[in-house]
Amino acid sequence: MKKKLIAEGFGTFALALAVLTSVNVDSVLATPVIAGLVLGLFVYTIGSNSGCHINPAVTAGLWSIGKINSKDAMSYIASQLAGGLVAFFVASAFIPGLSLGTDAESMMVFFAELIGMVVFTFGIASVVYKKAEGSASGLIIGGSLMLGIIIAVHLGSAGLLNPAVGLAVGSLSFSYVLGAVAGSAIGMRLFKMIST
Image 1 (cartoon, rainbow, N blue to C red):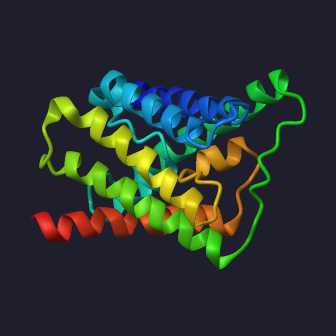
Image 2: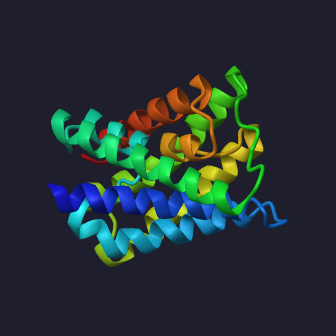
């Protein structure tokens, strides 16, 4: 279990740091593309070790469909949040005044995060239930994250889709955390319902 937790913590750190550093790029697509590529890479590098959740909301969604037990889910979430926190400290040391302005509490942000997360975790569930080709798992999951972020941003949120990334950017607002967790459970359950 120790190796899995290290993998989850490091993967979350890398994803959160990539998101934090991508906000300096002057492009609407920079963050979704970078986040999708990083997640896809980690699916291939640590997926066979820990499952590559690297997102507390994904872990909660997998727990909701019985793919991880409660004890392991809590350990994963603690490791992921630690990775997000370390990313915050590292990014803050290199990027003075780092802030994404994601403290918004609104139903619009909640539903934008929820819908983006449903799209993202629907793709994850296709891999979890082995309905997608295993060798394409990183492309499917990374692409699903990219699409989910794009949708969430266009619907009015920052497109975090990850409470650990929210922690890394200094925002654990209700709208971002609960939207991601609820969306994850819905996306996973929706795929399970139509495919099993």
